[in-house]
Image 1: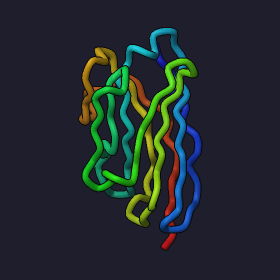
Image 2: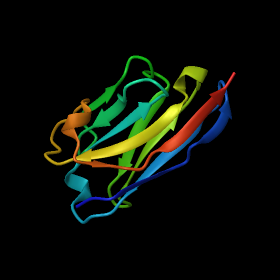
Image 3: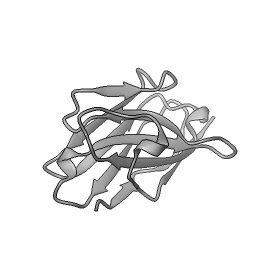
Image 4: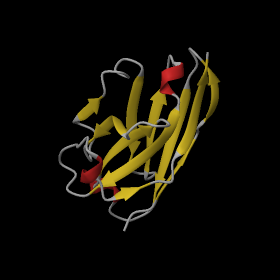
Amino acid sequence: QVQLVESGGGLVQAGGSLRLSCAASGRTFSRYAMGWFRQAPGKERECVAAFNWSGSRTYYADSVKGRFTSSRDNAKNTVYLHMNSLKPEDTAVYYCAARSGGSGYATGTDSYDYWGQGTQVTVSS
């Protein structure tokens, strides 16, 4: 069982930066692949970043490539989403998710076993 708690969301002006954190419980966290998703009002939840348990395989959505980076610190049971050059269209609730079988990454919501509660990111123009 893994429990995920996101933090770091907030209100930021366009062009600004935020760092989201996702703290995980569970002794086997290091073997889980992770993903960051977001959901804007009226839209489907979409994957913005995903990576395998070691971080050697990563995925970024085209809409965030070059602006967002993800990282994980297995010693701290924490993953991060560093968001730079934020745009109003990045406004959404951001979720972290974990999946077992962590050798690869996945971008579909159905592939993930555990979800955090989400954190709101609002980018003003």
